[in-house]
Image 1 (cartoon, rainbow, N blue to C red):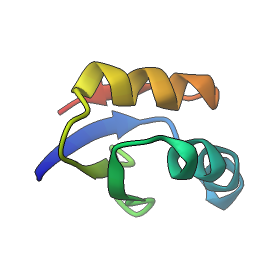
Image 2 (spheres, rainbow, N blue to C red):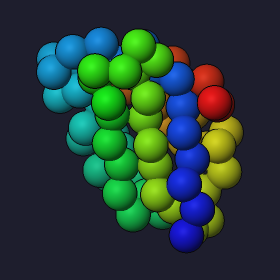
Image 3 (cartoon, rainbow, N blue to C red):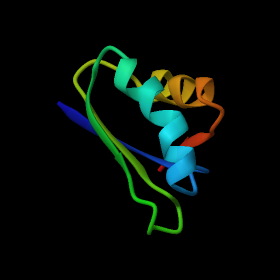
Length: 69
């Protein structure tokens, strides 16, 4: 299992509610969380087989950006 970290523009609980169904539906994500208190709004993803690019694409499908940290 690897941990991937991303700087995002997921700024509030409303944003979180939009991205949650997309991340929950993605095969290969064991767990994830967004730290809304962090200035970078860090998204941490636990996965065994997804690449950073695949996670970024998934976040983009929900209308948000994710840059690798």
